[in-house]
Length: 380
Image 1: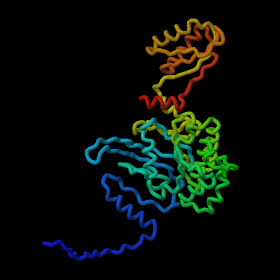
Image 2 (image 1 turned 90 degrees about the horizontal axis):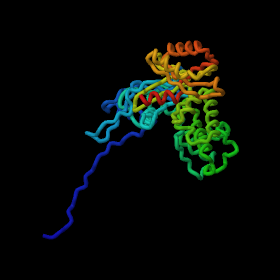
Image 3 (image 1 turned 180 degrees about the vertical axis):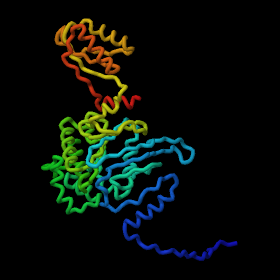
Image 4 (image 1 turned 90 degrees about the vertical axis):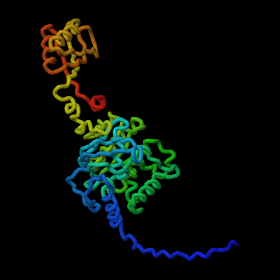
């Protein structure tokens, strides 16, 4: 038997010609249909047209938001990064999202921006479903580690990022001087960014985030790694943006900075919302009626028996008093920081001092600051 060529009849496939997609709305409908078929996804309202935003609504809304990760395809372990988180960010305020590493902050932001999908619950961004193109179009974003190619200048960097955001070149040229002046880079616009300090790069990153006039600005660690002067400059810029009506959402590990900048904060810990409220009243809100009272007391008189008086009042009330001398100008004048169990104990202590002819020159209750509250909540 000799080898030879085998004649194969060609198979003809009849392919149906697909009509081209005419606009992005059609693409969005196709995506919506695909997403609606996925299991365990809470249905969302269809996004409204870009620009159709309710001015009276919240900038960010989260309701019973959950995100569960799996370590394997079928039988892997589950890890719940967000556990029914509910809060909102009011328009026009500066809002801080706080929490230790692994708290769920990054997961929350990724869901808002549509980088990952939620497991259940609901979230909105500027009145639109989280992750939608309509919602993201109102957002400017500055990541923690913005990478700008060293061969670019401030001007060419703005042009590059503006083009990525579909901002016309004419609009970029109109805005570049104003934005660079706002962030303090006017006069350095033609200089290579490889000569920029980290603070200058952060400010340039802020300028690119503002190119398309966002209503919501999301900042990831905006003052981390900056020197005190650069931090002060960044705080000033944020304050000016807030005055212009921009909503600012930031997360940071620098609690003192957050306390100086933010109107409200939310504290996450292992996926659970521990607190959400105004910074100005956070100490009172967390302290509650049953919490201890810390006060700085300046005293004048014969103070040798002060520890004895504190112990006596503590034994009488059944709760000890913590006393620490913080300043002593003379044997008969000193300032103490004292922690009382309750207001009744404060009254008893003051009465006992007066009975010993010790004058209370000054008594100043100390409120919990943001760092105190953060450590108290995370430690519980």
